[in-house]
Image (cartoon, rainbow, N blue to C red; front, side, top):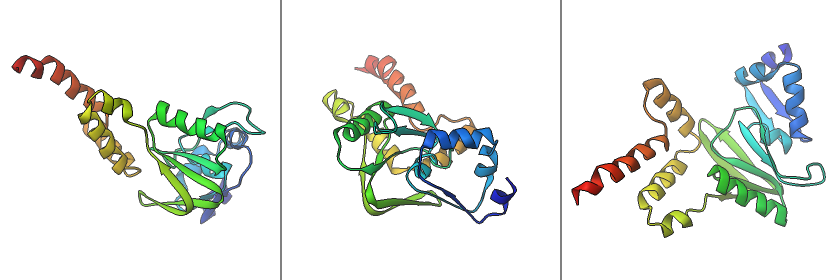
Length: 193
């Protein structure tokens, strides 16, 4: 813990991310790592564990898709690392988009990375950004919800700062207020016709 506090850079290596998180918890390093104010770098597993929640696509080490809890350095998006266009990776990305409604940064094998600094994400090399499919909303003529989701995507990742501000002010966070608007439309506006 002392070495982490004194370090200007923390580097998370590749490997098995769930086991890496187990070791971090075993040695009670979560709070120490999260309070670190220097640069944090990660490769492969070391990149995905920086997300509050991450997914793993099936591979030789993980026979089934799964969601895991990481370190909440980053939130509001997902990562698919070592992308090679395999069917299982495409299926995992579709699943994350459908279940979590989060954009997914797809880092192609050995040639892509992200730099997150001061609430901004910069793509380096071969990185694709995929956003949640809103076809169902479009087909149902839910234009307002499409607008809400599109605007929320624009605020990633500084949206986390805004969410904290809303929480401190007792205001609904992004997306949470939309149910109130929808209920108002269904209960009040519909009677005005």
